[in-house]
Structures are given as C-alpha cells and as structure tokens.
Length: 475
Image 1 (spheres, rainbow, N blue to C red):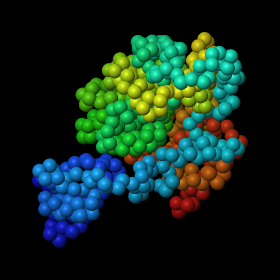
Image 2: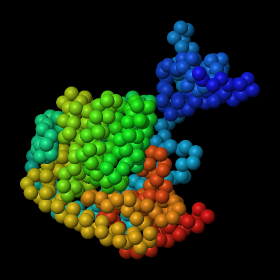
Image 3: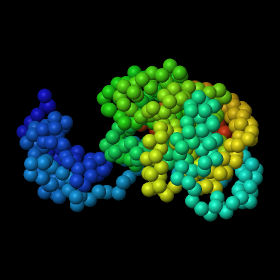
Image 4: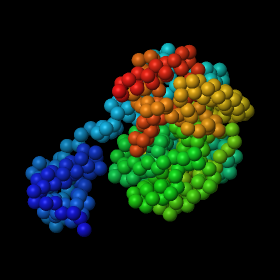
C-alpha cells in the first residue's frame, strides 16, 4: 500500500505532485492534449493520498496547465506553454559545462594549433586526400546529374551494391534495397529513433557509451538507462534486470571496438544478449562505424540475428572522410521503406550524390582494403607509443583494444577528469572527460584518448600540468 502523507505535510506533498507534473510538461514527456494519470494511479506512484492528488490537479487547473474533461479525466491544456527543448541536462550535481556536447564543440571549434587527444577522428594527414582528389576529378568529368540533381530515395545504387557485398562477406545476405544511405551514422540512428520511439519510451545504452548517443536520445525525449560495459560487452545479468524493470524499446550499442572503451563484445555475450532482447521484445541498433579498424572480424549482432531485431548502421567518416558525409542503414525491408519516407519528410533525401558516388569510387577496387590495412598498422604503433607516453604521468588504460583509436584510461589518485579537461584548455589541449560518456555519471576518474592525436609536442607535460591544477582546484 502507498505511504499516506500526514496532515502536517499536505501542503508540501501537494506541491510535490504538482511539481512532478510541471516537470513532465517542461521535459515534454507530457504534451498538449495528453491525458494525465488517473487520481488513483498518481496517488500510488507518488505515495500520497488521493485527496492530495485532487488538490494538486486543481492547483494546476487553476494555473491553466491542465484541464478536466468530465468523465474522461485530466489533460494537459492545449494552450500549455512548452519551454524550448534543451538538450543539456542541468541536474543538480552535474559538472558545470561538462555535458555530451563538450568534447565535440571544443574539438570542432579548436584553434588549428591546438592538441586534440579528446577528438573522435583521425588527423588529416592520415586520410586519403590524394585518392579523394582523384575521385572528385573523375566525378567532375562525369554526367551533370551527379553534380546538380537530387539522388534516388535510397541513395546511390552503386554504393548500395558495394555495401551489400560487404554485408555478404560478413555472412549477412541482404538486397541493395535493404540498404538506405543517410547523411551520417548519427542521422541513421536519428531516423530509426523517429520510426520506433515516442516521447517517454525507454532506451538502453552502454555505460559508458558514445556521448552523442545520449545527446540524440535526449532530443527524442526518452528515458535513458545505462548498462555497465565490461571487457566482454554489456553486463548481461544487469541488462536482464534493467530490461525487466524498464521495458525498453531499443538498445543502442557499438559492439566492435566499443566507443569509448575499445573493448569488443564476445561471442558468448552476443548470443546471450540476443536471447534477452528477444525475450523483452527489444530492437537493437548496432553501430558499426569502427568495424573496419578490427584486425580480425568479431561477432556481429546483425549477422547472428539475421536482421530480425537488429538494425546495422555505419559510415566512412573515420576511415575515408568526415567531410564527405555518408552513412547507411541495413534493416529488414519493411522498416527500410518507412525510413525512406522519414528521410524524405525530414531531409528530402539522403547524402549528397557527390558524397555517395565519391565513397563508391573509393570503395571499389583494391584501394580501400590497402588503405585500411595501413591505418591499422599506424594505429597499432600509435597505441603502443601512447600507452608508454601516458604511463609517464600515471595514466593507465582500462584495457588494450584490438584496434581502433580509442583508449579508455583511468587517471591517477583522485584526479577528476572534468576539472582536468577544463584546465587543459588553458594550454590548448582538448580532452574527453569520462562522465560525458556515462549515463550514471560514474566515470569521473576516466578519460578517453585518441591515440592518433596523442603525438603532439609537449603533450605529456601539458597533461601533467592539467592534472596538478585539477588536484589543486579540488583541494
């Protein structure tokens, strides 16, 4: 039975209930015309008496926030004023300024001379600039339509055929029409969220996870539940418990060279995860953006599942060009049809035909395979050098990834990564503090480093200086 409020606390309890409703409206979990919980349901949820809920609803009705409809209940007023949607969570106790946009905004807007070990891309001189120029010259000599017209609704047929062949090489047989090209992997995730989610739904993510997953999900006004990530993938026991408690619609992950930890999901965990997802009728989005950095293929959820409840997304921003924006979705046919319509409604098409045909030219033939092999060699060398360089100042990797450029590290002692990142900006160094990746805000002593961006002159000394300043600031 719910605990009943004592008479002496009735005023505060009434305001607590009213405040909870105001907060739901402000967070857009309740919108104009939406029905409020019944008086009995709200009383049970808030552990107060029914009379307290009646008083709170009357107070909100007097304010014009809600209105009563005889025989139907209480509804959010159509004239209720919704504040602008904020993608920054200002919860009490959250580090000032250290939010999911912190790393991306500072990295993108940094001075060209700044060191960016916290950014999420490779240095320009690692990327295939000359082959890109050659491909662009070839496109310029081609037909005018590629340079001036819209592309087909699913994107370049040539690129989709190449992507279908790559899927087949993984053991996933798909038709080119099961592939939709998008502006990026992030846009692909956004479209899937538009298709499958409604405000107030629950989505599970890894903890830690790619920070932009959290930012994007907040834009969709859903509840985020973090699952602890281990060296072998998500903690399955916790996954099962949280799924049973929160009935999530989606689980969003990147199982190969996980961002930010660099760990890879094991075959055993992958199989158990798919069983649990099926038991809870959950869809999985598998982000394969980092998969080409793997020296050997790891278990792929989409392959094991056959696209029954897994949707594969990816892009070539990490391996080819972040400027030529082009991502993709691979899913069951009916879902792709709906995603096509959503992309038409929101963007009137996918990536620029120039970008899509550029990527197609770079993927065709043997160039891409040789280029990626060279990137893997460079990254392996950079990883060894970065681990040694960070060890000088007491920074240690959580694990040694099989490939890629992410290195998830613990800081020495009680150094707070957010404070260290702020102090490092004074020296022109952009870092990636741990809690921007953590739904539970439990990674204050961690930092993600991009090994390809850690070769800058004087970086070690600047990291040590930022740590010392951070410790002094914390007393």
